[in-house]
Length: 274
Image (cartoon, rainbow, N blue to C red):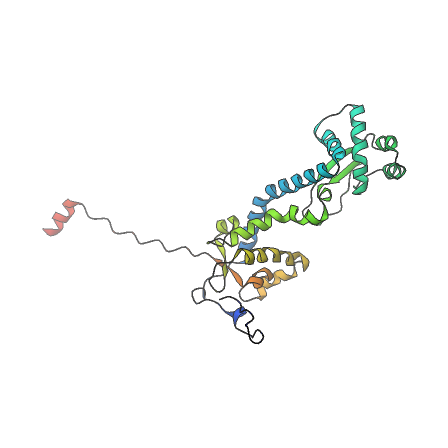
């Protein structure tokens, strides 16, 4: 049962839409918090490598388009062991980029050299330094770096308008397609024996499924307080369930058919007749 739409005459009126549950879904067992958390953990592990690969590719492509010199210098520093002259040229090319993104661990001399436009002094400021690369998909915790170590935050190489898409686009696509499927299951949910069900027993559209995926962000936005609904809500519905009127159900396996009794051997049948 879909939410009513504004009619040609008069305003939209109150209906039982938020509370309506299809008769065939009533009484079905709900997925418990631990099972839902385990399914999400499996999905996160599945998504981790593809999400990292897409984010790193987006950062590399963006840097190559906007600052080819820094891109080449970064490749030299990360993937080769350059001789001192080549290393000096690479740091000279990358130094301005690191200052621009305010990379943690930068020496003060690097900021001063960039302000003065002194590339020779800029390269000299990085003498003896090494670089560590990291990618954060969420808030980055405070990092304590060793002496003469610079942290390159890959996500800062992606332009802000595209950063969320590059970091979370794979996850959004995964959850959208899986929950809009006939089964209503991600790989993690399928493994744990649970599924997403629309309360009207209808299949989620791709837009509704995307809405549900986007509403996951409400959990960190409320500092996790919205998870209380797993125990407070009688149907264990979280904010992303209420957005599109879904619930997460246990998948009940059909009972195994009873085994038919084995036929008695012919000689036993003859003895029974006698």
